[in-house]
Image (tube, rainbow, N blue to C red; front, side, top):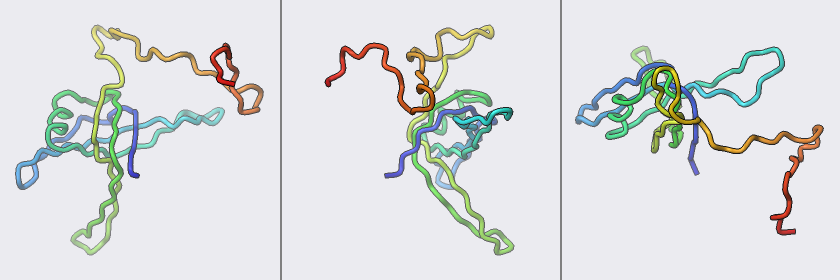
Length: 141
C-alpha cells in the first residue's frame, strides 16, 4: 500500500505548467512540522514536493498561495533522470489524490471559524505511556 497523509503550509505559490499534450500539472513544496521538538531547539520541518494533475492542478493554481495550510492525501513516487553530463538524479514526489484546506479563510486578520473542534489532547501519566480516562462508564470491559 502506498498512501501518504500530510498537513503543512506551502513554501511558495504553486507553479502551473502544461505537458506536451496539454495536460495541466502543478507543483509546489509543502513544509510539514515535525511532531517532536528537542528542548532548547526550534521546531523543525520536512519539505515535500507535491505534484497535482489536471483539474486539481488548476484548482491549486487558482486557490493556493504561499503560506496556505492544506492537507494532501496521495502516494509517493520516485523518479530518476540523467542530466546532460550523464549525472544520475533522483527525486521523490507526492502525487496528490486529494487536496483540502486545513484552516478557514482569513478576513481582516481574523479567522471566521475555529481551526479545530477536537477535544484537548491527553498526555501520558508520569512516563508510563498510558493516558488517563476521564469517564470509563462506556468501556466494554
